[in-house]
Amino acid sequence: MPNDTISFVAKLTEHGVVGFVWILLLAIWGGTASYITKLKNGHIKGSVAELLGEWLISGFAGVMAAFICQAYHLDFYFTAAAAGISGHMGGRGIALIEAFIRKKFHGVSHPIEATQNMEDRAPHRQVMARSNDKH
Image (cartoon, rainbow, N blue to C red; front, side, top):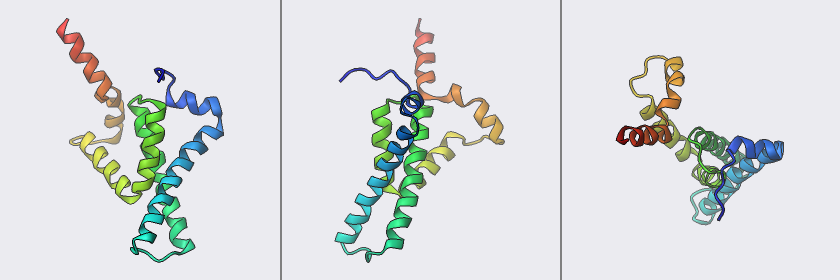
C-alpha cells in the first residue's frame, strides 16, 4: 500500500463536500451496524426514532474522531476507519473521546492555554523532540 502523505483536510478538500459526506456516511454506517446488532440480539425494539437517534449520535462520534485523527496527522484511511468504528461505538465512542480530552488537558486551567500548547503536546512532536535529544 503506498504511503499516504496527503493530509486528511487536503483529501477532504480534494473531494469537496463529498469527502466530508464520505466520513459522515462511514460513521452513520457504523451506527447502522450497531443498531442492527442490537435489534438482532433483542436489546432494542425496532423504531424509526431509535434508528434516527443512532444515526445522529454515530455521525457526531465519527466526525469528532476524524477531527482528532487530523489533529494527530494520521493517515486518511486510518481516519476513515476510526470514523466508522467510532460511529459504531456511538455514545461509548463519545465517552472515550471525552476521557481522552480530559486526560490530554488535565491540569490546564484555561481553554486558550490548552490550544496554544496543543501542537507541542502532539505525539509526533514528542517523538521528534526525543529523537533530536539523542543527536
